[in-house]
Amino acid sequence: MKLCVGIFLSSFAFVLLTKAATATEKAMVRGTIVVQTLDRLGTVQHNFRAPFEVKLWGKIWQMRVQYGTGFTELCGFDGKELCSVLEFSPVDFPETIKNGNVAVITPFSYPCHSEPITRVIWLALATDTNLVRSGAILPALWNMPFQNPFSCALKLTNVTWLDGAGFLPSALDFIQAKVSVSALKTSSFLSHAVKDDVIKEALNNVTDGVVDAEYRVGQATNWNESVFPKEFSLSVYAHSPQGSFPVQRYQGIVESLEEVGDFSPFPESLGRYSIGDYRFSDAVAGVDEISYSVTNFHWIAATNPVLLRLFNEKKQKAFVNRNHITKVANPKVVRSAVLFFLLTSTLLFFWKLKKHKTQEHA
Image (cartoon, rainbow, N blue to C red; front, side, top):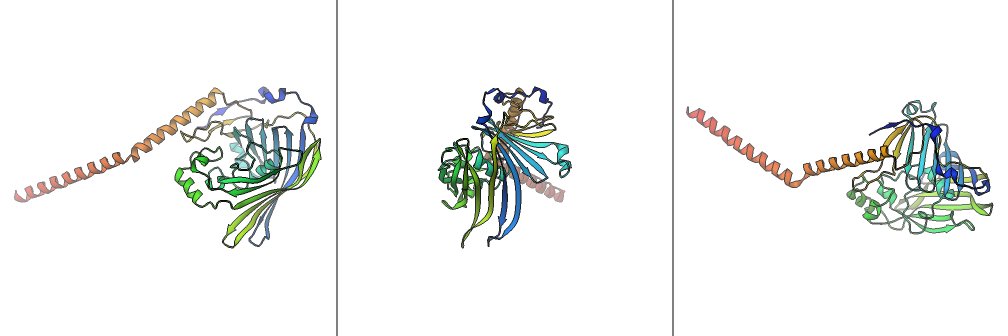
């Protein structure tokens, strides 16, 4: 259900801006990331270059990635919730602009609904140490894992940290892991709509311990008593009976580091936005999110009564649909219906046969 909520930027109130901090506590990182796809022989098939900038303030960050002339992704985290916005070019996507830009809100720091390049930059510069640690389950950065349990069945291993930073990794591996069905079902990064049998089938294809990707920092640089990656890369592998070979390579270069003033991690933008809000999720009801629209992008708290009403309505509808399907598919109901059909068909057959014989004797 879509709801158009008219909100004006003049009323934009953001709590984080009230926190006192000096400019020296905040950093602006600018750089470029190049993505290459390779064939089995290691020959580069495609190149794509994306400039980026990241503003950092402790656990609070804002990221801007330019995807050619087509669109820009704005992604920010306030320490509790994340918002990712795709702003499309009216020249390249005129029809999309008519329907509005797209935004996603989540209650965690990993931008799992963002573009792969954005997620690789997140790993390099805005890592959440609660998520990035040896043994942790973290979905693939290089594809869209929300509907794909195979891409969610990955663990991190061999995690090391940049000297002096303590919050940015210098190396780690993504390995396939035969985790339990329940571990994936309780994950925040896999859709509740994915059925158990689909998860089990995906886990049957997992080869425990196989390395799917390697992240490495080639060079690091010091800035304001902190260490940042200067060059970083993510290599993604495919596997065959003959061995593993790279099929994707993300290579990032940090070009500048400088101080930055106060900033809001969330975008302040004019225009119409279609929002998928994943703060409203219920595994029992099978609800991942609620959807609504705003005329001007504005941060709406999860306690907003309109959003809560949308969430309750979607859960109720999900339960009604599930109960209806359950009743229709109930074996006892189906068996009774079949028996009733056979019985009535048999009685009708004998009644017609008796009527026919009566007419013959008449």
